Length: 350
Image (cartoon, rainbow, N blue to C red; front, side):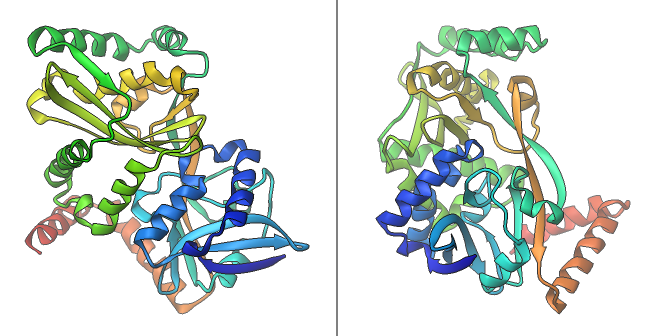
């Protein structure tokens, strides 16, 4: 097996066609994160995006996109990436340590790796479920299934939507706004949310904002950015920037006007999106890892993803392992809470 390493910007049309055929051959890779367009967009805004092109007997059989930070690799898209792994046919196997070595890395860290890629299993440290809304039988069937499961989230959100119409104005849903000023507003609301909850703003990083802008305008049958918005009367009250493939809509960056928070406009928008899904031919809305209460109430399917690291034997790997053990020790002690508060205070002062 031969591995050729290339800058992600050098993916040509022939390699993209092979990539797409591999993606379409593997039902585990239906997420937009595994589309060649996502890697190409990241490569437009980052110089550290690379791709391992894996060949067997002269034929390209897999792609492994990643970003490089010195000798450490991370998944393509870094903090933006909600699904990670190789682009390959189902059941494809290779020696993971050899892959990392041939990439010129001492380690590759992951936090949303598909557990279906068995060659990485020995490097998993933690596995959790990434929830989904399976709408393959239609929106009405989905609602009936959720009611039968005992969830009242859809009913309660419907009541809030009707109250919103009475008190503010008739609701208008647009599945994709091309207006860049609307995108700016949606990201601005999200920035406020990040600052309030985390003390930092993801969109203050230029490459992240530029990635959002490029995904917003990417429009094709196989990969699209989708800026969905909800108006009450003439007021924009909620928006969501996500990505779609022919079968998956990835729920990514929702936000709303805080003035209308009592109506849960983000949830109203999400259910409008779910209702619109059949017209796109989409079967699944991926909600992303993290079992928030609304996800627990709306999900009816899930995908398992893993956190971990593939590390070559080295002094750096030893240090990283020791650091992880120390963090685990601290997190299980009474010092964990004060330590986290101290870190947040220091970040807020810097």
